[in-house]
Amino acid sequence: MPATSDAAQPQNRLRLREIADLDDTAFSDYLQDRFDHLVTAAIADAASYLRPAQHDLLHAPGRLHDLRDALTFAEGDLQVAVERMTYRQDPRAARTSRQLRQVRTALHQVHRDTAAVRRAENRTRDAAAGTGPTDTVTTARGWLAHAYPARFTQLLAQAHAAAGLPVRPLAKDIFDTIEEGWADGHLTAPSTPGVEQLLARGVVAFRSTVADDARDQNDRDPALRHPLLQRRWNTALDELAVLTVPVARASSRSALGTLPSDFADLPEQDAFKILNARRFLVAIWQRRAEHTRLIHQYAGTVTDLRRAAPDHDLRSQALDAALDRLVAEQSAAAARILARLRPYATADGRLEADVFTPALRAQAKREVLADLAAIRKPNIVMHSEIAPRPALVATAALAAR
Image 1 (tube, rainbow, N blue to C red):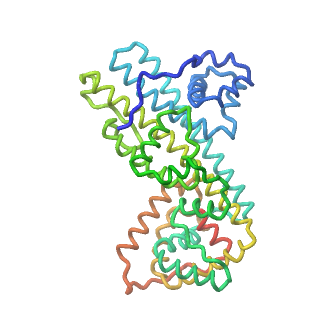
Image 2 (tube, helix red, strand yellow):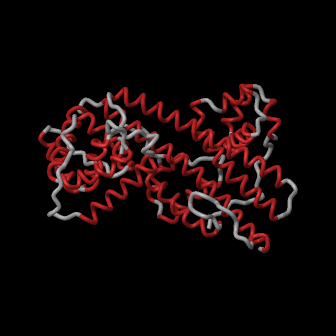
Image 3 (cartoon, rainbow, N blue to C red):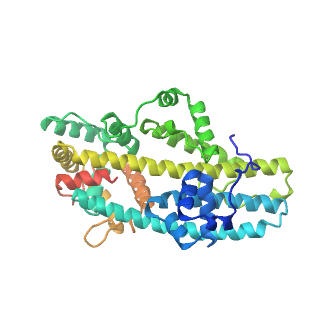
């Protein structure tokens, strides 16, 4: 099981109080130099050591996502440090515990700040595309296509053919969108020998590459960030988390939780095996955050460029026509989806992201698709309340799934 060395520490790292002595230019360079420098600066900021100008540089909108990654890593790393110090009865444990509380407070605020930036970006993108917040009808139409993928693929192909367009099947997930976007030339990352080697690598070898990338937080394998490798990177990160959780005695794949009650009595070799696994799990979380941000950037680029393409209107109309036919054929299922969405909607049927959060949306979609798969019977008759929608709105609903 891959693990990091608990004793390994970066060389020449500034102390928290020393960072405030850097002028603004040197501080900006320090943040960009290495990931562990960013982590140190984030901890110093959480402890209120930074000057106001440094705080503003660290919290600039363009750096918020990186700051969130650094604080996420710092939280886990400090928790493991407290656990190690407590095990060794190190008197620094109290001070490190205080830093951990400060980092958790800062991370909570940064989560709020990044959410506000995301909402603002979504509003800007919606305005540029001529769309507004997702509503129950457009969302239900999009989910219906996922509930009946084979039939919808047929209907969409027919609509494309009727419009004289090359067939482009509905993307099943964000990775399909990214891979198709790269094939269409919307993502210009070249296919280098390093990328080809990773694509050809077996499952275990590829997972080992991902583990090595996560171990060294100050380095990045650029080939791993290629659009064609995002699906495999996602799978490998999931597998590494699953493999590491039991060794780390973590409470879940997303939280370290408390150590076992007998931890203090374990031999040092066994104790540090657990601690190293917990540090490695924290590193996996940092890479997971980076990966998630990257795939959404890729998907956003593909969506924007497709909207600007000359055939966009024709494809939107074809998509809407295919959805209309599917709704007419599966009115009972459409009505069930619509009923499932109503509790999250405003009075006018909008699904605001603050209420219908991505986590709630994903959970509701899984439940709806499982429900439809379980009860799919030809004799169910329910009246559909979903009327045909304008093509651009239907396209926006599917793009936002």
